[in-house]
Length: 45
Image (cartoon, rainbow, N blue to C red; front, side, top):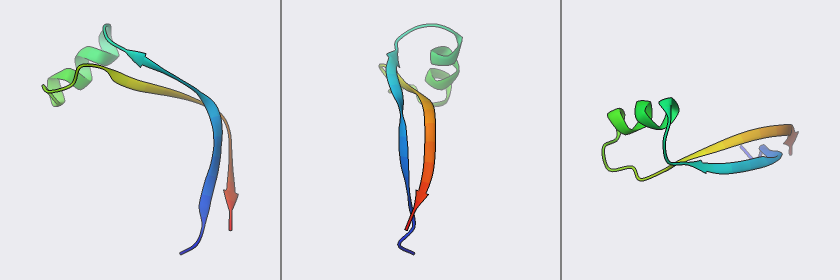
């Protein structure tokens, strides 16, 4: 308990393509998928 992560990166919404189609098949209510590209992740106390 009390441990977290500091995550730095960028994000974008995907509204079409194979990744979107895969997630849409699992969760039909989706209108977009958030894709996060992590640059760094550091554990904090």
